Length: 468
Image (cartoon, rainbow, N blue to C red; front, top):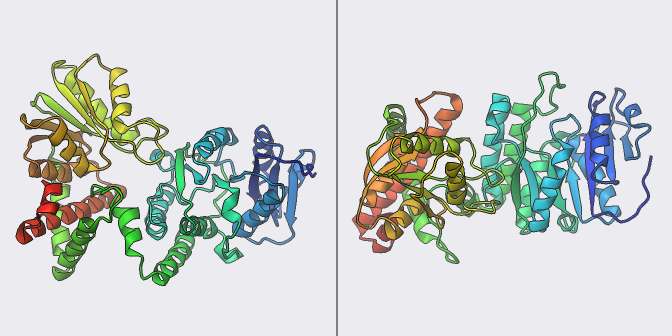
């Protein structure tokens, strides 16, 4: 079942272990996009192999089960032998749609030296809760070790550039089956190869076979791998800052080391340590209280909507909730002015503000929409709003999600705005994920407030100019 060794632009590698129910369909659909489809049967004990008998694919059989890491590596090496430019990997269980391959490859053509990841976490409602939160935990650690934010580190639907494997040394074994796809992101980052994400549907059929991913044990192995990587680099605190913190809280200083951000982070952590976590607990309770008590109404004539990271250049759920709240307010008063905040983030081709305007114009008729398209986080959102749009009139309504209202409103007040908080959601809904989000917001709020107090006490005018 071998295809000739002609040159191909990309190969599709599909690791398979006991996939009788799905492998034939996945392989046939994959052949619609490349004649170089490589299925690695990892010692299956069912009829996986026979399902592929009459399909023109490249079939590699492991006599014994060796794990996903070895299967991927085997398929990747076969692909590289065929002189491909890209290597596409996807799972055989139907969780990834071959029909989404062109979308990932299109991104690869614009980002040829990046790993392209089909990211599922935007589709939260379709993902089993345990898997979702396990993935979020893994994302935190891997983003830290890689030194930049990664939205779905556990997705196996990827496009790899061939040059990544020119000088890549990475352990593979059965025990590290699900560590491989995490570790390769870290190793790639050390070579200067980052990843970008493309939003894809999260497909978890109730009738699907049980996942080979073992939530607790595999996340533990991934965490241990990341821990070893961090310890070998002295905890790599710049990675923690750039990968897990700076995307959410502190404005960038282009082409300069952000010494203010590092200093604020250090002072904040020191305060938490000295108070045995009490200061963070107080911040958590404040964020939670604001989330619970905020209203959905506002009277100010100027409405400010915070953007949020786009999914395939479109607003995701949280951003749509904010925009829908604005629609409900403007329908009652078309004279209200709307300011949408947010620049180009991550792999998006347009700004958050532009995507928000397009969404609003599909739902309401108004010419009173103004875009702030240079900012990347809440602090920059409000600083640019104050500097470029509302130097004099400071009475505004802030529309954002409940978890974000406390931090957004305190930063706005720091810039001299008189604010009304307006929640995107009708009511606060408690959940494990919601509590974790509140805790993350509390950390960022604690960091901001500590930095502001420290700057005032020390008379650090440079830092103060960034914060108020």
